[in-house]
Image 1 (tube, rainbow, N blue to C red):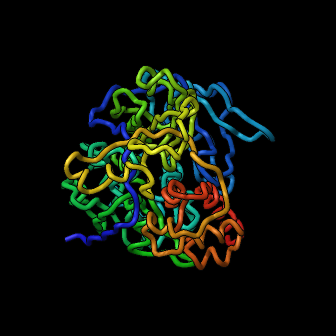
Image 2: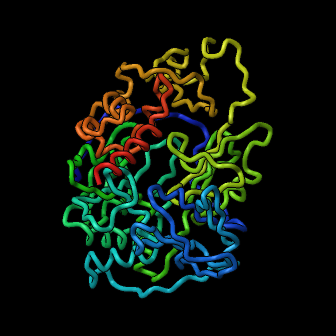
Image 3: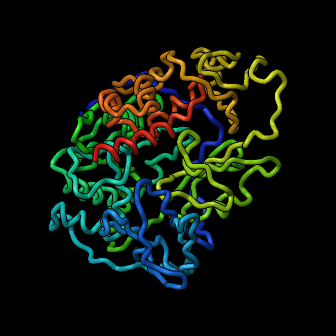
Length: 460
């Protein structure tokens, strides 16, 4: 029987617009883009030029630090442009995809006949390595370092997150192959986190993993929380994390001998008319996915990912390679409320129960009428001020650290204190809820990202 870890710390944000378990048409835009900034911490070296034709899986650029780490075309087609900004920084590489994807063919081999180094080399060459991340620093895994463990979460607890069991249905042979490949690259354990109460027999029957069940509110689905609960990171140690949907890329590569970056994403949010799932490919434009499916009378905020830690994109922008959903909410520019926050309301959520919505959030009310979903918008509803030490972060972050003291150390740039207070384990996504409840309206995810980059540059 799997181990069970419970926590009451956290917060499930009830927001309207959850995707129905229906898969619509396959949507691929007329232009697909690779954006180096989506891969944090790398310096791209472009190896294609405008007018070149490429196959899906062909290298487009590689990292200057690790030249063997390729970033490949998700589709076949013609390179439209290599777009550059100030100081010739590469902003994007755009591709006009063929009507039918032509794949680069790689040698298909059984995992059984390969060792960890051979698997690593193949993933680096095929451009799949960037989907393996590491703690500390929450960056693409350093291929020269071996992890003490690998963590995969089979569920996402973020607001409106897709149901991984639904998305992976019929693809578990690829998932198992991906797990087998990862298991060869560590002498430690591969940990698979499962949501308590899940009825998925496929996840529970996965081999070469140690299964742990988790029960509690968001962010219990984050691998950072699961690492902290099972195998905390000490100085000098490395842990890898892989999203369950990205494990499929590894499995497809070894099962089919191609780099198949197709992905099923959820179109979600209060301003989506019929939230559901769509098949697409990483790097596709947002516009064909949202066209005709969202509210048109108000300014909208498009988020590649979830509302807590996703990336803001324009309607003509592109999906980031790690996103499994698009969320659409009201920008809030045209919303004007009498007395602002001081007006008593039933339709506003408050973690401090400041509104009458506290009645709606009560267990008695929900047991009778069910949970109420709120229609959020993108307004900040307050101004940035000095950090308030009130213990509010501790209530929503189920990690054995002192988050307020860690954030203060990060703001001050005190690396010694960052190390002592849990800087090796934290990632921006882990403090997204802290940012949501923060009385001071501090940009905690940006603070953590800058601090981790500073730690990496100073300590490595």
